[in-house]
Length: 409
Image (cartoon, rainbow, N blue to C red):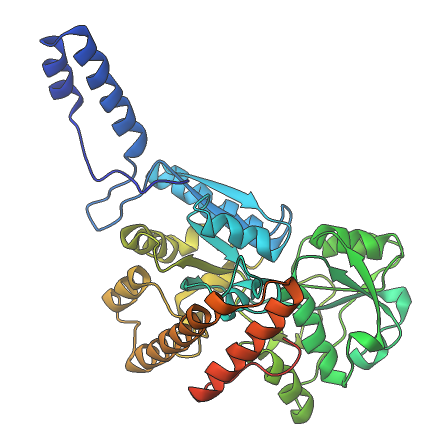
């Protein structure tokens, strides 16, 4: 488990002076303390930034936009603060958040799985998960989009309605991807029953399925680097539009994913110069837990803001970390106190942001309390447990006057 960074500082010369007058055993002990201290100590700039020598994030697999952005930010940490950022790729939602909960990483740069973990739904409705006390650090709303359909041009899919009867990838262990697919299918009043699901083992495997003509469509960020492989292949790449002027279609998508908003995407292969009407949410969404170290959270947010110009163009979608794109008053997850401290410091935390944050904290507490009441007497069987929890969850949210996120979640 990752340990919090050291709060203690030792002066090497002083320690060695003491050791020189002690017995051999004491000398060994003192040198051990000095060594541990030197590896525990990290960056400190006198302006509240304190980091250990090494921190770790989980992210989407190598080659994705989220992974590439984490690497770009890691270069800043190493060059400016002598802190190494280990980026741990996770092929699905559960693996990315499992490492966070287990303490193997400090933060996770993922997507909607953070919302599902807070809600205790989909793969997080199991006995070993349940609602999680997730906290937001920072959000990325780029000129690209967080999730839309990428299709093989030779499959002749020019609208969402054209997906009917087509082969669409279903990523095992990735409820955020699969539910986003379902939400976008609802734009044209389609469901998974109207398409042919093609099960794959991970995000990159879904790209391979299209390349190998096992599938016709895959979901992902508009600027996801693997889409370049589809564009360069004989099948070609097409992004079907989701026009915003169809109010009922937009409402169907947002009823399922209220954190998705209509968005105009400019960044991505084959996108037209005037942009493409799609939907988007924060991707990556950098999150920790309520137990994440406040000083470390404050330091990371401050560094990402102050050094934005140095990394924004070093990875696809990096420009989306801009401060003026943070949607503090529209978030669905509560922010971490360390992040709030910095946002208040620079005058970005408004009364509307505070009101939304308190609302999100209340929702999360309702879910945690519902789980605490439900768990002791819960059914033992896996399916029975999940179904009973979803009923208890909905009842608790309805009693508190909160949305349940609709059917199918």
